[in-house]
Length: 227
View 1 (cartoon, rainbow, N blue to C red):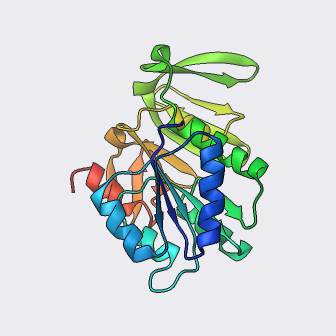
View 2 (cartoon, rainbow, N blue to C red):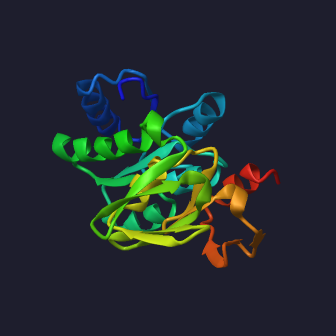
View 3 (cartoon, rainbow, N blue to C red):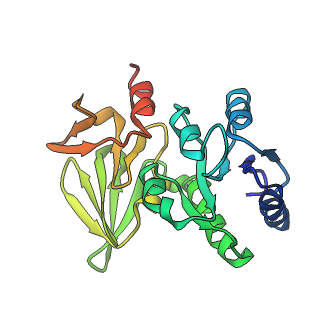
């Protein structure tokens, strides 16, 4: 995790200092600061980042405006003094939502999520994974997975041969799937891109299921499908 490339965007210098301090405690040194959304947009065009800490209420370009302008985004963590943006934040599939002032302990919880999302699957899971369902472990070939649907505290993994209900989060299962083949297109759906039958009216048709595509991911889906 210490090799993570982080971009912090906030119009309050002290808020940036807090995040920098927390990251440095974790031995993360590749940190870029921006005090406005316009400079952040330029930085994101010039180089790649793994993690974006993003304030919402900023002059000229808000955090959500910045997200709208990016066809491809790093992992995003919202950092704001306002709880009111939480619903909209998760509509953009942000990894976490931190309400200022947040403690180092709360920050560590977020970084644990980052660790799970950025850790590649073990070598023996490159072509398959094991799902824990109904008190047993079931081996599932990754090439057979059509989509994964979030159902509150559970997920439904739908394959070409059947489906499995597991007590797991969509974020965790998505992190175990090859990112070049799968994409989380909505807060409730991760799809196998190569198995999408058609895209129509901002929805993906796959395996007899119609999955909405969030506005945050429409450009990425079109890009990944070669459109």
